[in-house]
Length: 546
Image 1 (cartoon, rainbow, N blue to C red):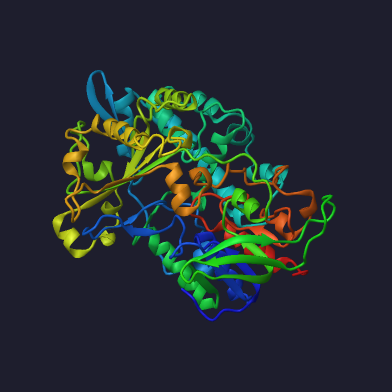
Image 2: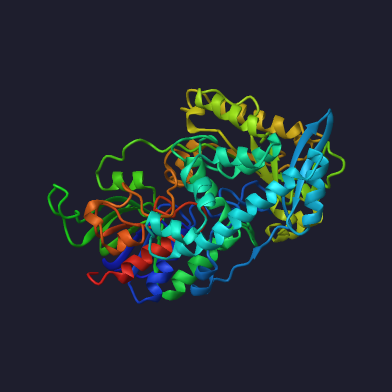
């Protein structure tokens, strides 16, 4: 994408991921002259759809894949043409009990059926009743906290008053999440299913005193006030297409194939360093034509990690973030049969299919990975997009009955993969170990179900944290850019120089008054939400000095 170029803009947005496009849409609709610069040949960042296998017409959500945190407010205000489809089955977790394969099915549409599944697994109603109480609490917290994510950033005390439930506040915001899980549940498998939402993209454990697990869990259970994770019809690329269309229609300019190489920005007053310019300058390289250029702007919004921003400013990025996941995409000829013959694969794979995610299994996998070892039983979760939305398949793929599977492996930190040149087999070992855990709950090897591409190769690809860094610019492969923050004002996130500014009020401030974060590294960032983009745009529009 490229339209008539100006050399001076009201706002330049660095990075054309979904948050950058949200900010562009809001600012252009408000009459600002907006330029988006994106290094890759297409916008979307991690929110893209790709035909990953030659000759196979399946548009896979290659990186991000489900949507929970995108507020309906943003969809409505930007007029997005987008459908998010609810999954009837929330999850299925296979396990062996007393030498017999069985499993736990959570049917969002039939509480009675879910209760029977709990009873069959655990021998009584205790865990089911505890589940109802626990998620009743998170639902009430979600209803009260989620609306604040698109409001000025509350203080800790203000959010605590909003939650208005001291027991819930303690469990989710004050003490390690493992304490609440262990108080609430007795069954190891049930405990593990609950804990998994605290570990997605976050290398931590149930009793981490830094509460990284609590922050991750919170964002996974509050989306749109319900915590539901929905399927984007058409794949993640449809989300990006809708956002790009809205931004362009509002008058934003988007240039792909333009890599930002440096930012010169104003310093915050009183930080002990020389003051900079009131107008920021952004240098870029045109990767298609080979030229270089500079554009000026009143404000620069950075839809990249804080570590990336520091490098662009010529500053010390600090400790490197570390991602901790293995993403595997597959296309199948058919769904595999399960060892648990009471479970229908079309239901089991439609929701989140948990593998090796018992509570003790998760702890053991973390301990092994923390020691630099590949987990002996890697935990992961899978879901099949095409059971809810077959529109990502072409007509021939539909006729053949193809299905897609996405596997997201936990406790796979970047340190396990090191330098691919030094240990090229590390990725293959991680993939083989993860698939072995899947095979252990199947009645047939997953390899027997894989489709083949035009060259006769199995339709399977895996992405490690180093590959995510190389392909889409996530430092260390960290999908949230850095550790998530609680959705209230915390010391150390907004600088002294930014105190009282619109950017600080919205949780998007940096050390530079004319540079704002609008990506996952902002407070209330992470996930496919558009929230940081919305909040950065609001900060720009509310600052009378700009």
